[in-house]
Length: 264
Image (cartoon, rainbow, N blue to C red):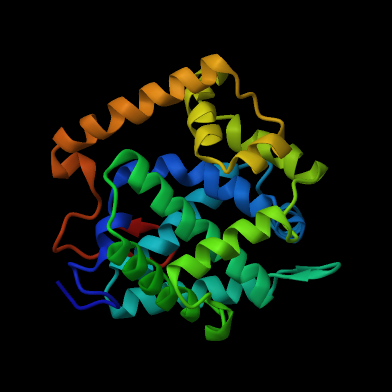
């Protein structure tokens, strides 16, 4: 295995290789869209309405390439993302705005940890801190200035709470409109009702304030189903063979193809 930006036993690799983290993808997207400037950029500069899952795939692909690629692959992914972001700008926003980059980065860090600790296992305070700092190393390559990172994981949690509680993050009509493409994407050969469990899990993982602002249903039946998933899924994950549970397997790199599709 060729060396990458992180050693194979780094906590950033341990967490991000778990396939169950895909269940937190909807949470991360909805948190990003809750920032009005991010929502505007996504709506005006992407094919989100036609193919919302594509943004999630690109985000996952970028993360995997940077975290699990060899150094050449990781830096190629960084260049591809930065070149794309440099072209994204509109009325009152630009994708390379450090504050917007920090918010998007924060949603990825927070969603990864929340999903991992909900469906895999709790982490120690030291592991959370290490994961946060290692993810910051990757985000710095993507344009987040070092002075924008809260110094510690505890400071980061305060940052996320303040952004939602009293900061610029608020769910506006555009975000609620785009949320429907996240929660009920039109997938070939997949009936709409099949996405209901995903909607409930996404709603359960969201911060309650954002769940309420999005107007997502959260009654007794949704809570009961979510609690059942939270109880049952970690047990299933624990007995799932590594070949199905994680990607890439330990000791393997991710490679970036010229079209920016990923292969293990």
